[in-house]
Every structure is written in structure tokens, then in C-alpha cells.
Length: 266
Image: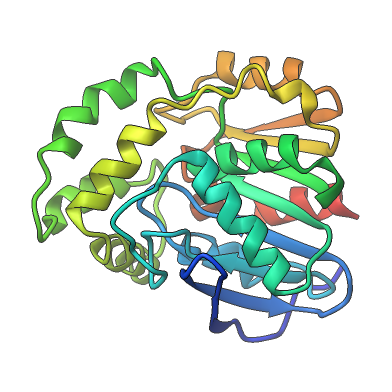
């Protein structure tokens, strides 16, 4: 499978719930559609390193979730179901009936709920640095006070520490990640985090019917191997791959990640 030669285009679309969603688009324009859902405090640029080399036959769409990137930042409603509803409306607005979902971290929780709620709309599912739950996670509990004490403008030094990967990435890419995180007001960092740490999808994973791929890095400091084994056991039609990488493995080892996802989708 060849890599996409097309330049990513940034676009925006208005949804019926009065949100404007910014998104990046690349690749072919056949029926094979892949939607990328980024993690907490990220944007579509979280996927930039793999979008550049993703097989050109796939029509790739990477939205900024509400409150993130250049999408609308409403005063309220940042629960998992709100994000799921936005993605449903986003796909409806673009005429997408069925797609493959790829979600990283928080985006993987959104993808799980979407796949369990709308199984007829999910072709395949890829979960990157994921878990069944964030509730009770000791690492997230450790940083909760720091998040809740954030003020505008959120300090760049905090963002640098928060977004620091386990393996080196190109400095220009890292600067773009930091710049995107700086677009998020402190109130949204706090509100989304409060919703994130309450997530527990354990009881709905058996409703996921899509063929699923679980990708995890052994250096992940947030979700551990037990989390991966539980995911694998609960999602019936799934396989898993482990890497020597961290929580942001799609930044750190993009070529390997693209290769394995491409083989899974083929």
C-alpha cells in the first residue's frame, strides 16, 4: 500500500448543535473513511505525523474535539456523551454512514462509546494508549490538583511537562503540539479533566462488534499492561500490539504505528 502524497487541508463545518468543528482532511475520497479522535488537551495535529504517511486510499478526517484546537469552545457540556454526539453530528454533516474510528487516550474512550452505541456505523476500531476506564487511575489522580489549579493563560512550562513524550520527537512537531494546547482555556482543561477521570466503560465494551486493534507502549506512564489485557478480554473481536514506546506512541514511532494500522485495515 502506498503512502498518501496529498497535502492535508484544514476545514471547518457547522453542526446542528451550533458548534463549529475544525478538522483536517487528507487521502483518497472513496468510501473507506477513517476518523481520528485525539486525546485530552490535544488537537488534530496530534495525528499529523501518521496522517502524512497514511495510505492514500483512505479518506482521513481528523476533527478538533469541542473545546480543543480551533473548534468551538462552549461554556458547558464536556462529558463523554457530548463528544460522542458531536462525532455523530460531524459524520452526518459530511454524509458519512460508516467509518473506521481511531482514538488515542481520551479519544479512545470516545471511540469505545461510539462503537458500542452505534455499532452499525463503525467499520473497524483502533484504540491507541487506551483502557477500560480512567476512574480510579492513580496517575491521573496525582495530577488532578495541578489541573484544577490552572489559570489563564496556562503556563507553557506546564504544557511542556504535561505533553512530554517518552521518546524523542522532532522539535518542530513538539512546538506545534504545545501551541495547540495553549489554545485551550484553563476552564476547559479543568472541566474536561473532571469528566475524563469519571469515565468507566467496562460495562459497555461487550457491545462493541467491530473488529478492533489495541495499540500500547510498554513505557506508557498512564495506562498499564493490566489495562490492555482487560481491554483485550472484554472486546471480543480484538487483537493487540505492544511497542517499546510511551503514551504518545503515534508521535514517537509513527512509521510502525501506520504500518500496523494499515495491515489491520487492509
